[in-house]
Length: 372
Image 1 (tube, rainbow, N blue to C red):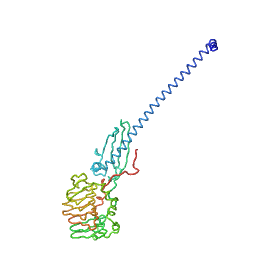
Image 2: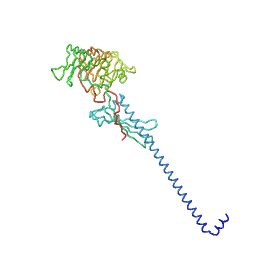
Image 3: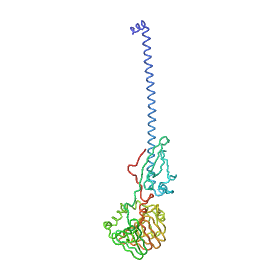
Image 4: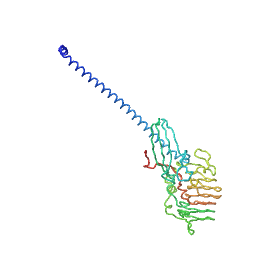
């Protein structure tokens, strides 16, 4: 200690220089620490911003994905689907109007807007693209997702005949079979009998277009085989997928036991249990029906039906005491199916494979999802 004091006393300049160096180093260290602290704070703020941006981006993406799922569900709601699949100007494209735009807010305050279009598939409203835009809760971030959906038709094997039966067909009265498209008016695994004034017309005046003892139909050994050949699924599964109506002649109840008229469901798949009398039109040219009747069917008055009528083994006849007209096709399971009265069955393939949305559920098309 005394040595140092003697040194400092004898070398005051060295003492001053030593203190100045310490001060300079201290200032440098303080400045460096300040820079490090400032940089760390900047990094922290930047990371917070990045984290917040990522969070908002994920919110927006998840909202867009939710909108996409909601949009797909809407397409499989028969009421909303008819609002979405509108082509009032008949140009083959979905009309871009307010009814085609659906928006909503999710529980976490994120939101979405979905639009439907088929610009890439003109004249085919069975193939739809959903565009879903999602926003974060503070609207600072957005995401856009697209997905194509296509109708999976209920009828997977399209009949080429006006009337098709697994076994025998009897036409009695004034039944007119017309098929100038495929020229097959009736096809049966058994025999076709025309009685009364019944007749069959094709594009060839010398050919009635009747095919009997069809080997393909004979190979379908049971009525269940016959049904699944056309629809691809069992009757029980089909019943669950479609509108179910229970009828007792002209009185019909829906699945909620409310009175209904089968004609209220254009463009739908309908399963009717029981003997049924229809005294109004069903389906339209743009929105034909698939009508599965588990019983006998009577077309009263001047009923006109667009679409496919399938009558199970529990229905042995279709009666037309008035002037019935079927645009599409008739398929029957009963071993001796009878059609009588005044009925025209005019084969129309477009009524079986409807061009405007039509029958069946919409399902996602693989490989069409994109977020750019």
